[in-house]
Amino acid sequence: MTGKLPEKNRVLRSIETPDGGRCVDFFIRPDDTFGFEEYRRDLEDGRGWFPIGFHIEEIYQNEKEAEAKALQHVTWLRDVI
Image 1 (cartoon, rainbow, N blue to C red):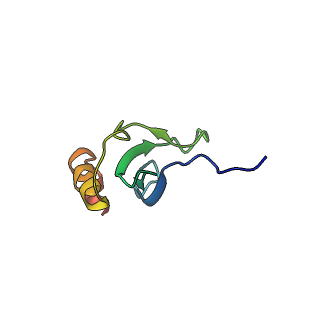
Image 2: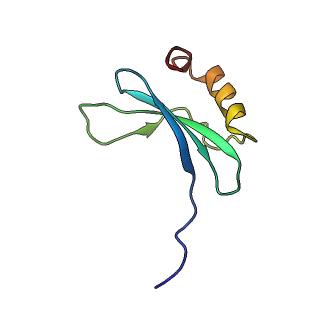
């Protein structure tokens, strides 16, 4: 079977807390719009990252706009960037 893989968001940058428990991904969608999402993980759990911000559907025209909005919504991000 041939064909294209389904298009999905491409992560441009991922910023993690120093303890590795939370991160924010900045991404570009196949339609060239941008967004971000906040995730958490429990290191002792091993199941991976879980979305906790529920910002993934918000649409921004560029990465700078997405970053500005993330800084407003994700309080720890200001201390890490």
